[in-house]
Length: 319
Image (cartoon, rainbow, N blue to C red):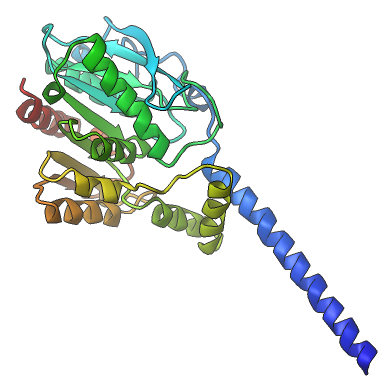
């Protein structure tokens, strides 16, 4: 009888060890899947530059032939950010920093096209590669949840202040997807940032990753384990969040653009950001676009996108 109990106990311990081993394996696997990025746009958008890129509007004014490759430090020591600088229609034109989405880079149409829209309306634009993507420094080979990328965007903001001599009130931030969340974090950390246009932003990264993992038929709790593992490796991806940082912006201007059929970052994330900004005393410019998916508003409605984008930054930064 005693031998039977001992054998049963050993079997239970073996089963627990197998379960724990499997959980550990999937935790590391999910962490790797969620965070690993490829430099140089992952091979996408070959040959695209401000002077030559695919765009939904055929008019040539959206091309930017007079661009310059520049580089500058991130606010995080040891990282160099690669960017394209395109001066505006006058030496003192206001400028907008544009930040791309996950697995993309400054060659992506989702930043080149809005840059072209802004430039056609007289603005200077600085289109950046976030860390570990494009031609910027590769340190971990992983994205940092918008937390680290915010410091790259602030490095671009610092460059405009120091090298171009622009006053803070003449510089805005534009972000799409990951870049949108990172831009909100950057503005929350730097009180002098004048305004943010956030297209398809997330409010809470953990919630978004749970949603995406569940869509991939993995249990959502594995995201929490993966993020805990990431913190144990020194990678903090979820704090501060865009939701926390938009509250710090107070009444500073924010535009929230989101497709109502976004399958990657649900529109509820945008609604959460809107309510937080309003509670902090802000009056966000809101455009929730019907029948539109993730980052697709600029392609489905290019003329309206241009009008809204130009009016927003013209009113905030001074045309």
